Amino acid sequence: SDGALPYVPARGGIPALRRAAADCRGCPLYENATQTVFGAGPARARLMLVGEQPGDQEDRAGEPFVGPAGRLLRSALGEAGLDEDQAYFTNAVKHFKFAPVTEGRKRRIHKAPSLGELTACRPWLAAELRGVDPELVVALGATAGKSLLGGSFKVTESRGALLPLTPGTDLPLATGEESDGDRRLLATVHPSAVLRSKDRDEAFAGLVSDLRVASRFLG
Ligand code: URA
Ligand code: SF4
Image (cartoon, rainbow, N blue to C red):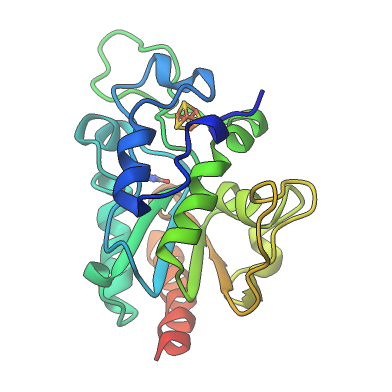
């Protein structure tokens, strides 16, 4: 299947993309989720942050990074000297995927997207990259990194470094994608991983330290 590609409008910028994504049926994830959670922030931004997929609260609100992971991320951005209001936030996958709801639980438990779902949803991320045209993309965790740089990407090997953002060969960003010569990518851990970490302070400091590289790059 072509995934999201047939749903992506050729023109109209980020607002048109957001409207069209609301009706995407490029993979089965729309069936159980509440709504598409598209990117949010200025339609032109120097910094784009890419997470994995919306969580429980994002699915209900229709906005990325409004739950616990988002709060932690915003606080890390602030500590690193980055202005969250000037950043564009999005996810590699735009629908919430969750395990069957078990009784007595308020929050639905997130499930990692499959490689097929990641690939299906990539045309939206590629279109956001073209539209927002950021100087720096921060990949939050392995899923975002794989979507942006290819399936063999590993956070532990590349975190904190300014990498060229050249489309991966096994997961091309989009068919016919022009090359993005001077765009950079910086990978770091996912804020949810910080929340789950045994030493949360240390994990948070690591996230802030990576984001300071972004802050210095953007000047
Ligand atoms: N985790 C993500 O990766 N994205 C969100 O929007 C929220 C939590
Ligand atoms: Fe479309 Fe992505 Fe949602 Fe799948 S997850 S239906 S590709 S927006």
